[in-house]
Image 1 (tube, rainbow, N blue to C red):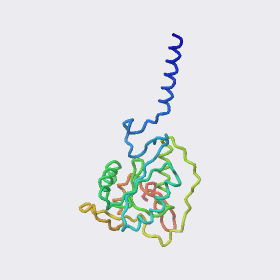
Image 2 (image 1 turned 135 degrees about the horizontal axis):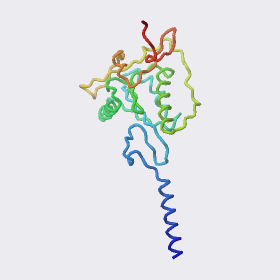
Image 3 (image 1 turned 90 degrees about the vertical axis):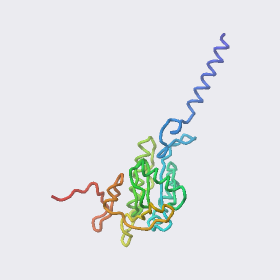
Image 4 (image 1 turned 30 degrees about the horizontal axis):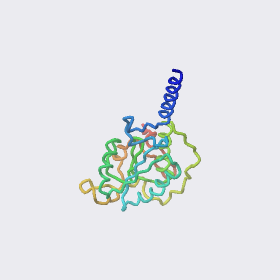
Length: 212
C-alpha cells in the first residue's frame, strides 16, 4: 500500500513538472498570433511586417534600418514582403484589415495592431517605430535594455517627408510607383508619425493645436 502511494506521488510530481515546462502558444490558447507569440523556447516574439517595392526609393532607405532590428533586438520577428510576389497581396490585405490602415502605399510597416506607411529617416520614422515596438514588448511582459539610442542625423537635403509608393489595386502584381502621402492619407493611420519642420525640429502632429 505504501509502495503504491509512493509510485502515485512520483507520477503526479513528474506530470506537474512536464506541464510546468510546456509552452502554451497563442494558437493553442485560441489567441491571434499575427502580432506576437511565444516560441518553443518560451521566448516572447513581436511580429513586424514590412511591405516594400523594388522601385520605391523610400523602401530602399528604410531597408537597412528595418533589416537590422532583429539582429539588435532578437525578440523582433521580421516578415518582409515584396508587393510583386504572388502571395503578398493576400497577406497585406489581411494585415490592413486588422489595423484599419488601407493597403495602398509602401513602405507599409505594421506591428502590435498598428500600421503606418512612408519613411523619413532613421532618426524620425525609425525612432517612432522602435519606440512603439519597445512599448508593445514591455506591455506583454518583456524587458528591453535601452542601450542602442538612435543618433540624430543631418536631414538637410533629405527627400520629402514620409515618401511612399502607391500600389495599383487593379494590378496587384505590378510594382508600385512613388508618390507622397497626402494629409488625408496620413490621418487614417493608427498613429501619426512625427515630422521634422525646418528651423523647428521634430514634432508630433497630434500634439499640435491650431491658433484661435
